[in-house]
Amino acid sequence: MSSGFRSFHPFPCFFYYIGAMVLGMMVSHPVYIATLLLLLVLLTVLNRELPALLGLLKFYLPIGLLYALINPLFSHRGRHILFYFWDQPVTLESLAYGLFRWSACCSFLFCSFRIMP
Image (cartoon, rainbow, N blue to C red; front, side):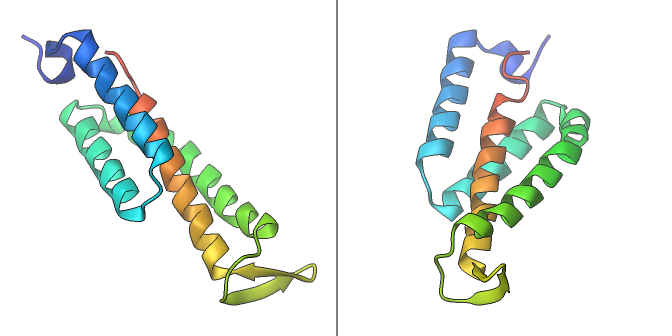
C-alpha cells in the first residue's frame, strides 16, 4: 500500500503544488517564505526523497550565493553601506533582499521537485 501523496487522487496534489508555487511567488513576507521552505523540506522528508533533494542542493546553493552577490550590484537602496564596488555602494539591505529572493526561488524549486510520483 502506498502512503503520502501517492495515496491521494492527482487533483488535490496538483492544486496543492500550484497553490504553494503561486503563493511562494506572490507573497513577499520573509516569515511566510521561511515557513514555506520548512514545510516543503518536511514534506520531502515524509516522502522519503531527502537524499535526492540534498543532491540538488549542490546546484541550489551556488546559484543562491551568486544571486545574493549579484543583486547588490544592481540595487543600491539601503542605509547600511558595507563597501564600495566600482564607486557603487553595496548595502546590507540589498544583500539580504538577494538572499530572500533566492529563498523564494528555492521554495518554487522545492515545490516543483518531483511534482507527481
